[in-house]
Image (cartoon, rainbow, N blue to C red; front, side, top):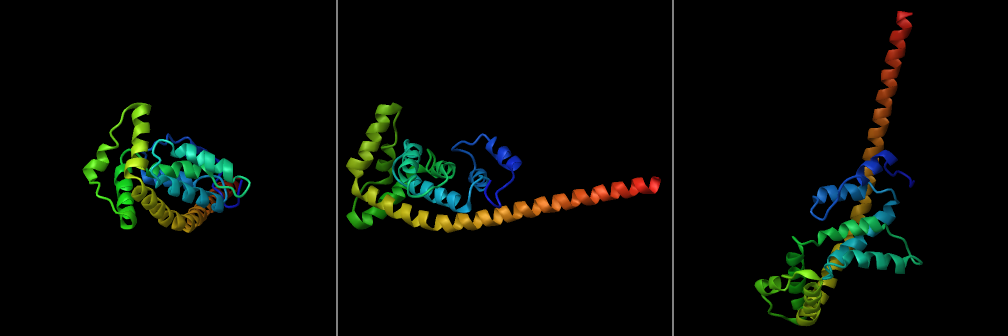
Length: 202
């Protein structure tokens, strides 16, 4: 177990949570903070997940995380679970606002006149074939503004994610360690009281 990581009991309780993409951001964040790995690895994994989650790769983002982890393994290590959970930032409820915002950022560089209604209509699909057509339309029809805008937004958000997560992990683990010490001290005090009472009775 890494230094200052949460206890195995706390980690197992977190891992037993039935996490879904619709889980609250607070639940997902607490799960990530409770992962048993170094602060660097978890923070880097979260940053990688943030970057991928901001790209128009809906439906294959988790696969991309696994592929990136495999390809970069000889160079560096990041926590895959942290990355997999962070891509949940892009989900059926948020992907249209996120991708449209990315598109608008991209129009600063390439121009474009796709309305929000037109953009939203692209995401109405059922089944794999229609999903594939949606992805193709995003990259081919909308094209450069969305791609470049997504890369800009993904970079801007991913870069501060790393130091922010390191800070949150440090605070979370310090608090967890403090609570454990307090609990241990309280138990010892209770045991001493019991022993003293027993001695007085004797």
